[in-house]
Length: 252
Image 1 (spheres, rainbow, N blue to C red):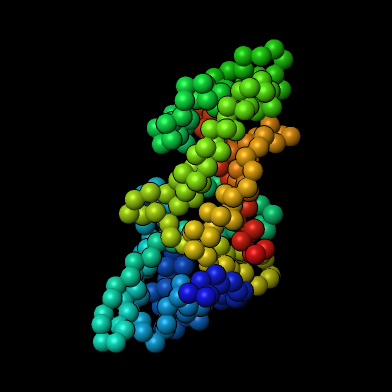
Image 2: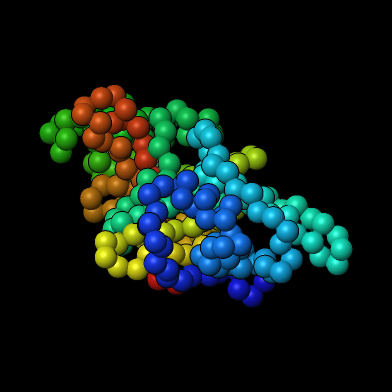
């Protein structure tokens, strides 16, 4: 278990366009050096593997790919199932959305009190600003709320930090993600990858202070919570979103 965290760089002949390319590599693992490296990163002995079957998970789940690995150890056959979340990124300094929902969906998940629900809806723009001369007439920034209101939000997140981080990164149920595979694709350069256990990623991204930023967003460790925005002015701009820079995984 001493090499659960694996990183490396590899040039792929055709590059990675989407999760289907990762599925294809796993399914062709016997002839694919990169897939072999991924399996070793997940702590498998290649000599014990009998077959690997990967498939893309359909629906809105935290895992993108499910990999079934059949191994034989001392004449005993075992079937492992691993769920991977895949992040294909092209900008090492860019941010990637990891969760996006209406405030009410988070209220259901985390039993958010009414006072905080109202604050978050003003923050996201479902409710219009209640102050005079807001920075944005469509919504309120967190640093436009009173100090007491900001404290309500920060204290609630701190009290539920582990649950919140787990839900937005790992998810719940059969297709919760057990691994995060980050592939950095930079034109005319080697593709760099890191495959790490999700529990490691929960600590990497989610551990740290809960605070209101100077820009008026919310930070949980290395995770930013903000109004979704964009969407050509459609109502979906009023959803909350959580974002990370997946490439921080390479800095460890």
